[in-house]
Structure formats: C-alpha cells, structure tokens
Image (cartoon, rainbow, N blue to C red; front, side, top):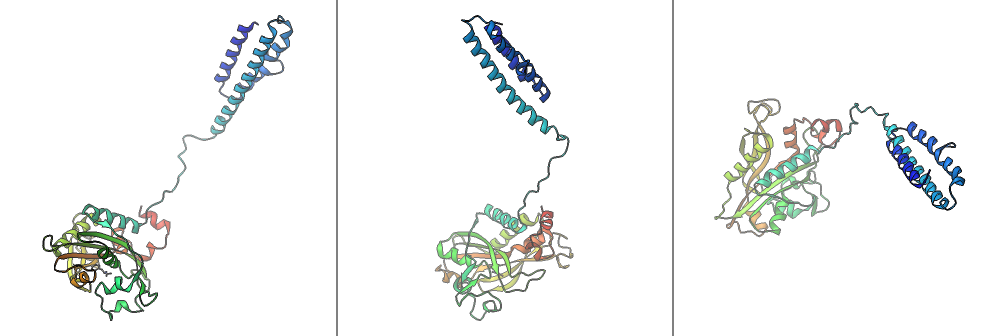
Length: 340
Ligand code: PHE
C-alpha cells in the first residue's frame, strides 16, 4: 500500500463509521480496523517492508489514521448508545401531563375590572391597608359617633391608626395628591371585625371608583354614574344585565344609592341565586359629598364627581356561582381548577 492508497483507505474507513447505525456496526468496524488482526495494526507490522526513505512519512500517516479513526469511532459509539436508550420510549404514548397554574378568581375579577374601566380612561390607584382615622373616616365625612368607628367593628392599632374598613380612603389620598380631572379605580384588601360565615369575612376585597371633573364645564352627573356602571355590568356579567339604583345613605356621598344588577342567572325572573327577587346587590355609590371635597381642599362649587365601591368577592361569587365566600380563601386547588 502506498501513501495515496492509505489516504484512500482512511477516507473509506471514516465513511463507514459515519454510516454505522447501531452499536453492533460500530463494534464490527472496531474489530476490522483496530482489533488485534485489524488492518491498521497489520500496516504497522508491515512497516519494515516500506522503503527506508518513505518510512517516516508513511508511519506518520498510519498513526494519524489510527488516531482519527479511534476518535470518530468513540464519538459514534456514544451517539448510537444514546439513541438506543431512547428507543425504549413508545413514541405513540401521550405526553406527560403537567398542571398549569391559574389565576385566582379574585385576581381575575380585579384584573377584568381594571381592563373594563381602563377602556373608559380610568387608571388604577393604590393605597396602604393600614390607614389614618382622617383618611378612612374623618375626610369621608363620617361622624365621630358612627358605628363603623366602634372598637367592635374596626381593627384599631391606636387612636389614629386602623386597618382600612373600605377602599374609600384611596379616594382621599388621590384627591389630596392630584387635581381634577381624576378617574381612578382602587382595588385592595379591606378589614372589618365580622365573624366569618358563608357570606362574611373579616378580610375581603373592594374596588373603589372615583371620577371628579370641573364644574360646571364638565359637570359629572348621577346619570353618568349609572351609564358607567351599566357598561361595567354588561362587560363583567354579560349582555342584557340591567342596573338599578336604590336610595341609600353613605356619609361621603349625596345623594347615595345602592346598586343592584339584574340576576344574570335567571335574567331577572327570580331564582335561588337572587333569592327570587331578580336583582343582586353589588355596590354602594353616589355623588361625592361637598364636605369630602372641602376636606381635601377642593372647592365644591368648582368640581363635581361620583364614587362607587363594590365587593370583589361578591362579584366573583355571582359571576362564578360560588355559594360560600370561604371557598375563595381555602386555596383548595380542586375548587380553583373548576373555575379554569
Ligand atoms: N365604602 C362603601 C362601603 O364600603 C361603598 C361606597 C363607595 C359607597 C363609594 C359610596 C361610594 O360600603
């Protein structure tokens, strides 16, 4: 064999490694080329027959072939063994199932509300859960003898510091820190000293809404409030849901109303969900009381506005048909998964 024949044989051998598909083929090549009686050791043995002057170049070429061949063979052995390992899988089997996390129904109601009011130009405002008496009560025109101020109704930390009982203090914070026009919704946790049962919890969530603009140029009216809440009702509960206002009292709004949505389950005919009335109470609302405007340094002759506040749990319970508020806090994934 001369030098060019050797290069040729080398090329053929590397081609055979490339074409090998399994461990048996790899082993056969090893035996044939580098085994005890293989062709490469035979060449080494035959070196003595090579003319003396050609010997160094020929010897070097043989060593290179051996090294390259062994490296390529080793790589191929590794490649076929990993493929053969995988051959244990049945490719027709279904894939492995992994559970995917879901957003909590309360989070979903909050995010949907923010998106709906976002389309109307409202932004989301935030405030702390630990509030001052001024922001939670005084600025909201709540008289000192009001029952909500009582130790038995509110979690007080000191004479001036409490866990907010409503999201309305965020209205105060927003008006103290900015000028009209103001269009915000404020979702967040609220606290009352309620005993927990199927419809009450000491810790729940509200979403407050506030719209204030210049008066009389951009006078904000009760009709505006009703149309905005009707739009919200349709977006949140579905087409055809109606809105009803009932006269009520809140210290911070005048006039004040309680807001009912027509029952989305029976379409107002009367069913178990709406206790046969056809309506479900969802929010408190009204026109911002002039005294509240004075507390935040606004001139009630120059601004007008509406405010509303509703319970997130209440919306989630009627939207998803959840009969017990406690289910929302137990983090039982079997319950949460059903709402996916
Ligand atoms: N803060 C009131 C409540 O918790 C709801 C409300 C908000 C009423 C804004 C009127 C205006 O019951």
